[in-house]
Amino acid sequence: MNVPQRPKAEVFNGHMFITLRMVVMGADSELTSEQISIFFDDKVLVTFQQQKDDCFGPVRERIRHGRGRIRTMGPDYLAYALIDAILDNYLPVLDMYAEILDEIELSVMDGAAQETISRIHNIRRDLTALRRPISPLREAISVLLQEDMPYVGKETHVFFRDLHDHTVRAIDMIENYRELTGNLMDFHLSMMSHRMNEVMKMLTIISTIFIPLGFVAGLYGMNFNSEVSPYNMPELDWYWGYPTVVGVMVTIAVGLLIYFRRKRWI
Image (cartoon, rainbow, N blue to C red; front, side, top):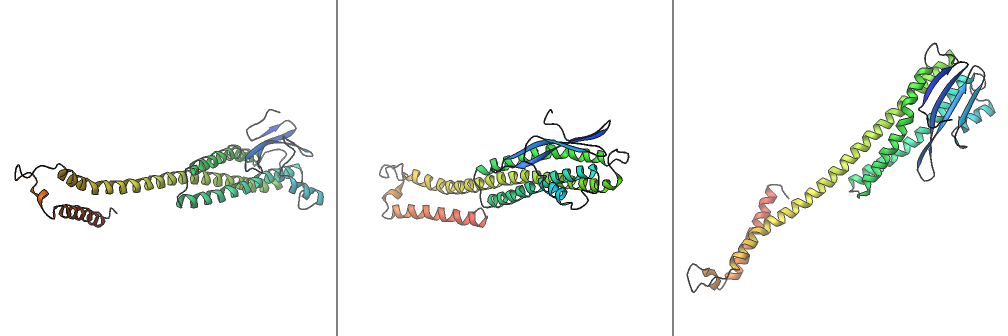
């Protein structure tokens, strides 16, 4: 009655108890989960859940139509079928996150906006929320695989082993996607840093070009009188003085651009 509980499997006097969490993706793509509790013995299985909606529809259909082994085997097989339905419900959620991560990866390569960081962070948070209930489930299923476990027949062991493999696969997918979110965040930050470096490089090049031009313009802007001394800028009295200075400035700018180009700075 106290929820949420950590997923686990326990043996009591007269019955087996399993608790786990079922993940539900809402219409607004919001991830929610609820606790499912399963009690079973040799003849009876009882489930408790918090909400009316669940993912047990396919199991109910198999019971109604008598498909497969579900009506010929015991409550332990029904417990397997219910847990398998819960695990199968994780896979569409993980597939959805895989598609979202692919979309984010393309947007990052195309120069995504700042809100990409928040999207990646939200996905990483959801994946962490997915890992929290499914990681202990592997331990719970391992308990059910013990040879001397009561209420679990030998014929059902093979199905629980398959369930254990599905759990490990889901955990691996979650870990891979969490690692991918971290890589995407690092890649996004690297792309932003690279673009910033490109901007700073261009600004530095422009500033470097205009530094000598500003020096020349400032030097000739002092307007020393050449009549007082022959050393006071005699170029001010030249007929072609202004075009000469402008030509020198253009030559300096072009020379710097050629030098930067040869250095592969631009």
